[in-house]
Length: 516
Ligand code: NA7
Image 1 (tube, protein in one colour):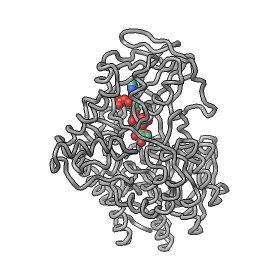
Image 2 (cartoon, protein in one colour; image 1 turned 45 degrees about the vertical axis):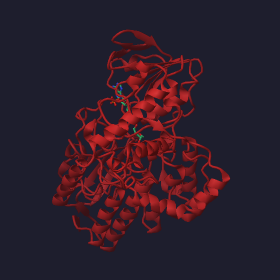
Image 3 (cartoon, helix red, strand yellow; image 1 turned 60 degrees about the horizontal axis):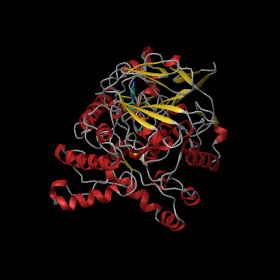
Image 4 (cartoon, protein in one colour; image 1 turned 90 degrees about the vertical axis):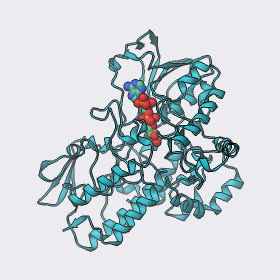
């Protein structure tokens, strides 16, 4: 919005929640924090904010991030252009007027020439498809909807279902604060230590002085992180050298252990298996009970082929007397009852049930709004199977709908702000071009869109991420049609390549779009 206002465009931002922040407004569960270095997650487009804002920790917690978002909103005086509590239900393209009509849950109807959804990739939470969820009489909620006013945990019997990045954060944080904790795990993930720490004044000064280099470094890495793979392949070094390097990685902060590794760890099965074995031993060394340790070690996929949850004393939580791991492969959940959860072997009573069961990722937020394009076609229908669009920006049959970081755009696998800024820069230029051409209708062409879809699919072949269903392969066991994954929802080629592709398209005058 800031960039469009700078172009003197009449723009209004509609936000479903009661304040700005999106992910960081909503996810208020204990333990919610960055896995990206705070100082690499900031906006880079304005040096004043880079110099002014001081993060307190290398990996900031949610309340601080929400303060940051509000600080940026006020710094650029954006609030007067924002309307909150605007839940979009339907958006219909009017062919005669070349505009979108937007219908909101509170009954209001607005119209606009161009509609720019910036509705997030992990903003449609999904509850598990378990019988009896409505019957539980105590408090229960998805982590996304953790109550704003907080929850009393002391002495409570708590169940957490799900052990993805969110579940891992919440479990590690509450294990020593609750009475009893039962973790219901279906498939374990490979987790690695975050090594968070406060930022010292010396570090703060260094971060400010080197901010340009930090952003430059991020712009060159596939994930937009400060970490990037080293040039060597695993087999090119001796075993002693690689073990020393892996020890170093495991002891260093952030995603380096995943993204700063040998360059073939995520592409070559043998290298991936060797590193997975190294991490498995780390888990065994941290969990006292060898049976529990084995249950926490993934057997169905290699390290890093799904998003790596970063943790702080997560594995040690299972050494506590008040924490129990329930392996759902051995004893599946049968139902949720009025007082607890019944598994195939027994019934456990709980005071609180927490669902850390993830999101209808990437396409879910789009599917939950009924976008009706040319000739009454809906986007959800068009996107059954994998989302088909051009550059993650435009969809044929949906003129004047300009997605910011839509499905298949380059941001889903990145340090989000880096991916977001790349898309926002490009989108701003695109809108400027539309205005300069005097166009009132712009649409992605069917052929360009199909070529893009093929390109997206081919890039998945380069990585091992398809090995095990996860949200980046469009998997969600709780969403009809997504149970198997195998959907091509993200751009797997890395941020530099995505940015280059976008820049080429812009330089060539936006081939693949029809301006009218
Ligand atoms: P994830 O990574 O999708 O994890 C969801 C977890 O919930 C995962 O362990 C699932 O097990 C589990 N789950 C889902 N449904 C069920 C049912 N029905 N029964 C038992 N367990 C279930 O979501 P997160 O919120 O943790 O993380 C999403 C992203 O947010 C993350 O990548 C960060 O970028 C931020 P499964 O693996 O399907 O067996």
